[in-house]
Length: 305
Image (tube, rainbow, N blue to C red):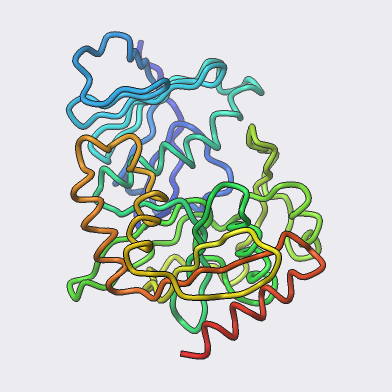
């Protein structure tokens, strides 16, 4: 007899999501199903002649297989369906480790399949448009965004920056989840303005923190991108155009897994983005004492144009 499972409904990135896996922290949907997360069996070992293959992923005829030891396996198909095979029953506490991967790399791959340009970054709303922060892991993308949120600038998205282009060629950011992933040091600096949203903690030790105040799911035109780099001072400066495209491709989640299949399309999207958005370098010092200086530099730089 077929098991009938409860279906949860969510909304993110402009999509109605129906899921047999509960995904804490997401906004409730209306009951539609542009995308389905279903529980089932995933066996990547039976796949032969993969187009792209790596230590924990492979691509075959557009389907993406991802797997993590002690967590689970997934198959992502056509930007419409994700088959999820956890290593434990959903009631088991270990299953909660799967959630950050479903809402992170799995969602990023699915969005890429649907034609979004997907970058690893965070974004807030300033003066009616989206301002994005990109950079290497640990450079402070989420920390910068949450401190701007603390100063009254609504969060648009954290970790996944999903972009499509309007008919006029303008980049449009689709809001994701109303929370930020922060390490415990960053959370301690903003805990009076946010709460730990769920019991989930990523394997890297980050916590999911509420950032839902004034959150909106309306898409926004991307007005500016800041590349965050570590330094001894806090300063915004220009980047050369060629450097912009190279950095955007480097921060695209598709660059590694889809490098042999959709790299040309990804490059064209990145070039289109650079041609329509002001890109700036943002040097930051990792000092919570100077975090308000960082906020003011961004405000002044953005408002001077």
